Image (tube, rainbow, N blue to C red; front, side, top):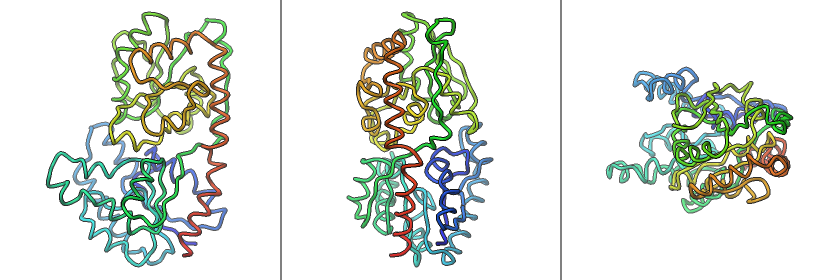
Length: 357
């Protein structure tokens, strides 16, 4: 089966990397010939992280390439699309450029809220139902969590499937830190993300400062760029696909703070899955998919207040046996529900059925 894959980013974009690229070698072995067409390459994304915005010339070039790729769609049996092919374009244009070939939409974010909750009434009026119309015309919508799947069903998508974001277990070996039992090395909390999501850590400025006055720890921030949290010892680590798993496994507790807004309801708790794959216990905000991934008291804790963050993190930092118990259970949960090895057969089946109908 010949598939054209329209990703949002290159390998540097976490959503594209985890929802698509990590499956490609396995899909080729399963008989798929996949041509990848990213909208925004790694260099463009890197410029955005450094400057805070995209350059207009880069965006114009990206849209020109994307429209050219869409014109070649009839050479393929199936179009596999990350979210949308032409963000902010009129939906009639995108539907026109998708006609004649079945397409699959994949969502791991509530991007429909970019439009239907935009502060401009004009955007809400003209584009508010843009993603819903694309969903309704899709052969299949693949959703990373229940919130996204529910939206697709309400939009009239004829076929909706849940497929969580997953990790390759072979890249995430469990590593126990013997030094954690001797107090010779300060314990580490860990957060992994990007410069565009590091803002969530600032939600924990007060509870982390309170916790630091009670017991010492280091907060390792992987891939977040510059950050200041007064009273908290920080360790900034650059992100790399080759080192991210090891950088997490060297730590003791993984954290995932979030706001509680409709946008965050669409997130797929990928950080938690990474932490748990490394055998780390987790503490997270009780928002969206976090509540599905964490089993309260078995693989980690949900913390909805500053006091709860201090209490749960303090408990885990003090208790090695608790960290190991929750970490082992978290790894087992990833093996059972959130691994590439479990998800691959489902994805192969879905793409085959979508392309053959």
